[in-house]
Image (cartoon, rainbow, N blue to C red; front, side):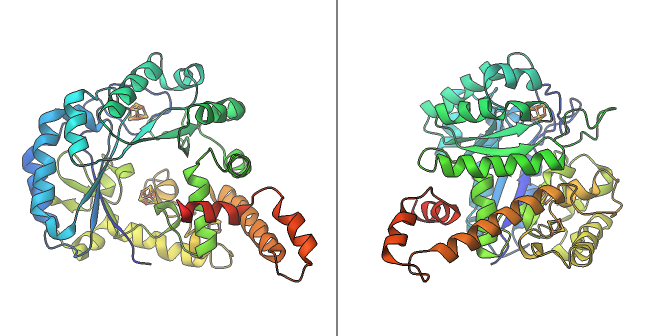
Length: 385
Ligand code: SF4
Ligand code: SF4
Ligand code: SF4
């Protein structure tokens, strides 16, 4: 499978919220100018000849305001028509106005937003008033025909209320994407909110069970992705693929990084869009070498792991950012990935063996067809959608 080409645009690292576990916002961050957007288009014109997806990320990307999107979207679309650009946006929706919503709707931009469950749980970790403001933004998004999916960050605390959180998503008919709280590199107590790999692994199995239990009315994106990875033996999301060289992020000043997660960390600057670096220039920068160094490290370190082809050592940011670029280990969530990949493999093998026609009588096969849905049923549902 060809790696997708993904460019994340970070108009600013500023954000009006103050979530307790935030590791990415910076209140002193500048806002990207339209000249920098033009420089992005110039840089990309001859960089790669494959379709590109742009994601506006932050901080809070809507802080850039309606004028920014009114000018940036036509520049990127028209200057890069040969790359058939697609767009997406990740936002807490606090600043979504009907004016911005209409601009985004014109380009059919899907939005990823963040809510951590019912109001009480959400606000206890994201701050008083967060829930109401995001819900207000969601209303405006819906009124303007925008499609919103929610990422739910599970912390070491909120994981204890997983039933309540899941019911919230179920009752509201929302698609859920799980995000485990990471240790914050900007906090004196980085692990205060982090979800441990053991708890994360247990949570993934819990969510797999819930996905199957509610196969017709609940969609959990991570579970779909994990099953697809195992089924196709190929990493189908960035965490489980080699993202180096196929994903880049551009910060407010035009600096280029391997991913939005590194933006603002000087050690991970690969170049600047105004210099129009080639892929070779980027990958030969110190930051580029670190990323390819991680890939080689995974080949050795995970060489004996049965899941290596569709896990690839997990996310390089998780692995190398906490050590300021020293490659010492793979993604610390390895234990969680191992657990869920083992589980899906076991279930898939069992189901394949039990498929009607695999050496069982018609009566046995009828009984089995009435049993609870399994991983294969989930894969079929996703293909048929
Ligand atoms: S909404 Fe996102 S960027 Fe803003 S403070 Fe919360 S976690 Fe950080
Ligand atoms: S660094 Fe991690 S989050 Fe970023 S693109 Fe790579 S795998 Fe994805
Ligand atoms: S599960 Fe762990 S050991 Fe296996 S490939 Fe993933 S990170 Fe490496």
